[in-house]
Picture 1 (cartoon, rainbow, N blue to C red):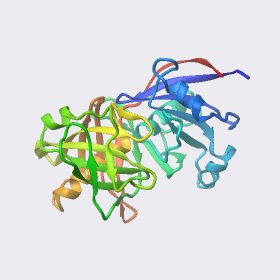
Picture 2: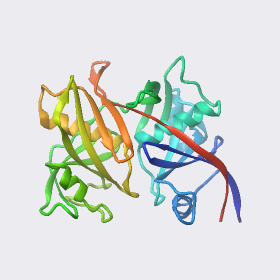
Picture 3: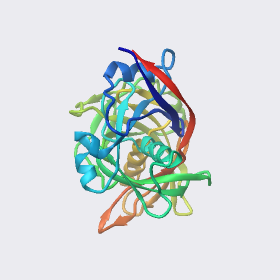
Length: 295
């Protein structure tokens, strides 16, 4: 039976999403329906779906609700698969909540439930000096073992560093812009060994100089699991900055700017309650709204 639902299209540095409001948790989107909505020829088009649902309305949100988060970000990749977190998506999610009046962020941080736990957001200036949001992604983990990465356009396999920021990433350092531009990310990079739940793969090139005025700078391209190459990946940006900081050693800075095909994002690594957290900042834009009929 056909069903008509409302939606809003949004993006963060070109990483785009179909936002579906479902406050009472009544909508059960199948993987195929998500894939059609995200299809750029037959649907609305997007790298994923953000279902806006009250944390108390769904089983996955119960822990978030108990922690004081009213809203849960049900993030689905473009192929319908569920993902733990999305750094660009959660900023777009916050933009939507505040624009429609379902939440406020001006006086206190806004907690949002995700499959990677509750994340808090505040307003910030993005890398271009305009109003955006900053999300605390929490603590991170550097994986002990390297992963060998094969990708079209870079010849021999390269070692990658595993970084977990709530979802899994593998970061590969490339020597120059020419090799970064020559990557063919139409084909999915192959990881050996393959992480149990897959991983997003980031390819990074350091700026020259790497650090200017106490801020590090890198450029990145990314292949997202369940999506393909995207113009930006928020958690991938954080993972890339963390990996380069790890390689650079103890003198490396705690503030970074990361250029992606869709724009520029900021990363910082402050100490919070005695532990290092990684925070991601950047713009979040709502583009248009409408209704769509689901088969």
